[in-house]
Image 1 (tube, rainbow, N blue to C red):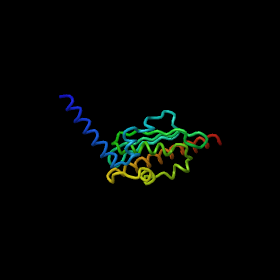
Image 2: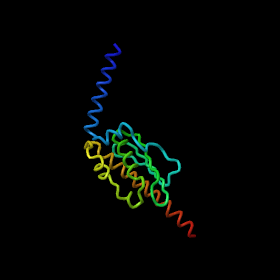
Image 3: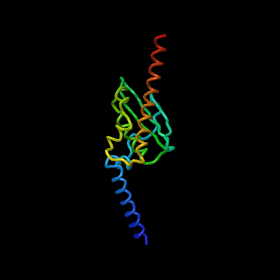
Image 4: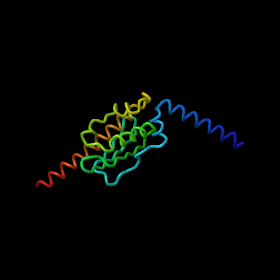
Length: 151
């Protein structure tokens, strides 16, 4: 009896993987299965938390050294699409200057993915908006720190 159940579960999982790979593309599928850069960052220089139109919450954390991102991570309470997009937004920020981060948009994330379901595209824009807000947080702190040193 357990062999039949195991066969059923394996078949079902295989079909889910095939459907997800077709919908998200290879990169999206890999990030869905093994998200990178997931987790909170206590010593972040810039951080943001936004809620998307779908109700998913995305958090993004940035750490800078010598004007470049040396570490980026994200958290989401959302669906697989939010996980994929948060992971890619954090990856794209690594090594970037603030100016380069400012150029990362939802479209940039979608272009990297290549294939993504129409109904999940908003997740790329949520990830990009959260990244931009984390950058703004970093810039606010940088300007405030510079102002306090001048006085």
